[in-house]
Image (cartoon, rainbow, N blue to C red; front, side, top):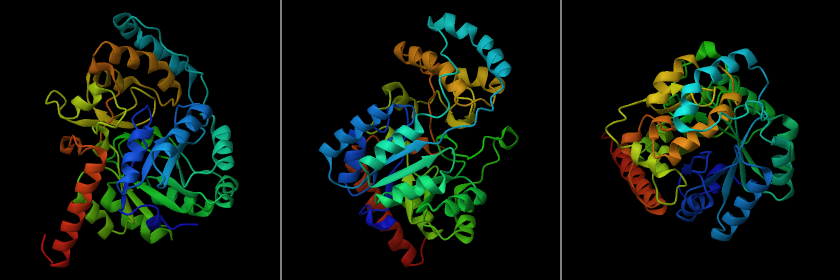
Length: 355
């Protein structure tokens, strides 16, 4: 099986961003430019995932990855979800749309997706919201697929090593979108570790290559995480505004719109902590959203879609990392080239002993 460093020419990985952002065109452009592109299978049917993989293979022969969401324990309190539903009644009137079915399922068709990916293997598979069993990891190992588990703590990294994963993606609290914690504990909301403190802690605890994720927007930051012990850097928000990205144009514009001043972690849209630009929906509903993922995600899906259709970013999930103001509206291949040049320059400065 290939080593992590053999999968791409540059230590630059495009993060899998669910909801349509990480489309085949974006992943192909990144892989072709020397990075590692990723598809996001979360919220997709196994057939839709397979069709995206087929499309991606027509666009590049370079390695790429597919990200899977782990099945979630059904621990949500139905009464709390119902209370939240009632609180959202005003939104349904405003956007003239019904709330979704919170009981649409908690496993994201995980087993069926694993079956597709082991029957027709891809180079890399990563996992979010939990750690797969050793049996699942072994299935991928037998077909030559490199496996990565997203972790947010030392304990989660140790679980990934025990399961036999090939690498861990260490996600700092700076990261945009969902925090990839293995267990959703409301008592720990906002308690996530920063990336540069988390990388060395994980490196000392496990013998696995580390992919660093969270707020990375420049080649100098890639150099910093490599110096801290990572083997590669994963960037999401940086690629979100690329023309190849499937993100909604309102989402892309919001990243640099002075109206949106900062990001926060919220449960408002999905019932799980996720970092996004603070908008009206987050301010009004975030404090009351229950710990209920993916129930709240399904509940609010129609509202978010209706808001986008109405051209109103104030009720969209505008996922963004803490470095969102540093986005550059470049084609994905050009962005990879620029990041590579910045990385080389930063390494040269470090070698000379200058900041």
